[in-house]
Figure 1 (cartoon, rainbow, N blue to C red):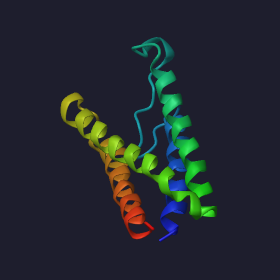
Figure 2 (figure 1 turned 180 degrees about the vertical axis):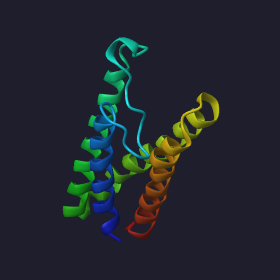
Figure 3 (figure 1 turned 135 degrees about the horizontal axis):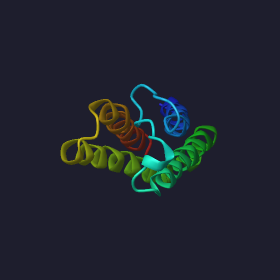
Figure 4 (figure 1 turned 30 degrees about the vertical axis):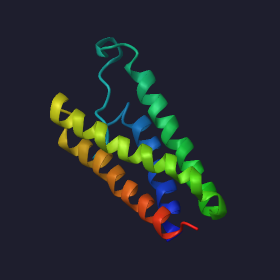
Length: 128
């Protein structure tokens, strides 16, 4: 079951890189490519995209650390699990209320929900 931590590390690493890459090019199942600099509205939007990518990369490192040192998984994985559920909820809200594309909802929201469930299972099966 430890493989879940390694998969979480890979997913978050890929997610962080694809969030940054999608600022400059169209990436399937990722965020929309940013428009030209003068058309970005609000102008601070790239800051939030970059911060989100950095957060994904930090959690990628955390999941890899927990994979290597599984004795520390509890309680740290609780935070990762909660963030994954949160990512799904905000994706669902954005999809329903703000017309975020379905491919982004699937690639970001549903994939995060899948890992939230996997992390929950890991914690339940490995509690002491």
